[in-house]
Every structure is written in C-alpha cells, then in structure tokens.
Length: 230
Image (cartoon, helix red, strand yellow):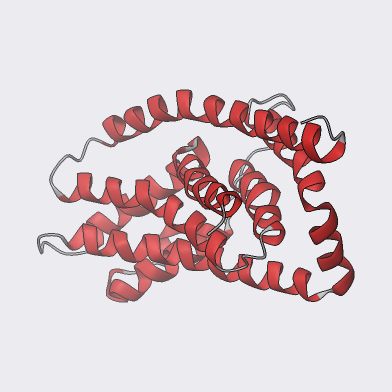
C-alpha cells in the first residue's frame, strides 16, 4: 500500500474518532447507550455486546453510503478522469475548508438534527434493535459529521479509488469511542457526566489539532500540485 493510501487510511480512522467525540454525535451516542443499558437485561457484558452491535450499525451505514456514492462517482468516466488528473488539486481546498470549519471559522448557526425517537425502540427488539439503532442514528447527520464525512472522507475515497476501505475505516473510527463508552457503562461507571467530561477534554485539543493538520495538508497539496512550488 502506497504512502498516500496509508495517510488516507489513518486520516479516515482519526476523522471517525473526532466525529464521534464531537458534542452532537457524542450526545446521540450516550443517549443511545444509556437506553441500551436500561433495556439489555442484567447479564454481564450485555451493554458491551449491545454497544458493539450499535457501533456496527453505525459503521455499516457509513460503509454503504460511502461505497454506493464513491462507486457511482468513479463509474462516471468524466469524473474518474477528473479525479485521476486533478484529484490532489481538488483535495487541497477541501482540506483547508474542512479545517476552517472545524475551527468554527464559519460560525455556529447550523444545529444538528435527529431522525429517530429512542422511545420507538422496545426492549423486545433485543440485539437487532441495537444494530438498527446504530444504523439509523448514523444517518441523522450532525453538522460536524456531515462536513467531515461528505467533505473529507468521500473525496479521499474517490481520489484513492477506495470506495469500501476508507468509509469502513471511518466507520471503525466512529465506533471506537462508542465501544469505550459501552465498556465504561458495563463495568458500573455509570456517571454520564464523567464520560462526557473526558470526551469533551479530548475533543477540545484533538479537534483544533486535527483542523490545523488538515489546513497544513491542504496548503501542502496546493503548493505542490496547483502551484508546482514543492
């Protein structure tokens, strides 16, 4: 695997982690896991198992959307030719804009939305309900998840002709914090405020650091592939 694809793979995983610990997605994840913990029975590791299924559902949604979208784009000869010839040039402004967005340079006027009421999930749904919950909640894109997924992951996947692997890695990245929270809940550390506090601290330094890395990479690609300086 080329160095460029390795960099894209690491970016996909890390972007997924950053997405999952951002305020809107983490609030959704904690609400879902709290609901799961109340309806998964008293069996040990029940919350963890349901949390894994919830995380799998989220990852599946990102994989399916990414695969279908990127595959359809790459199947168009004109788009495929454009990405082969101008892919790195196109990624340059995309990464810069994504970094600026993560730094809130465009304001915070747009808020997230949810498509699903947790009360619609019944305990009798069991493991299947956790899987479906994760899948549908992933479709309820918050501003940050929509910006990073459609603004960074999809262009990266198209540029690297990786319609399956990069959305998969992004989905796994979003699943890691969810699994961590499920472990915390399962082993009796049920103070949600503590979980959100730790995630908030992580997000406060990781998000701006990632944003500046995106901007730096975008500037580098621009200088190299657009202006031919490097």
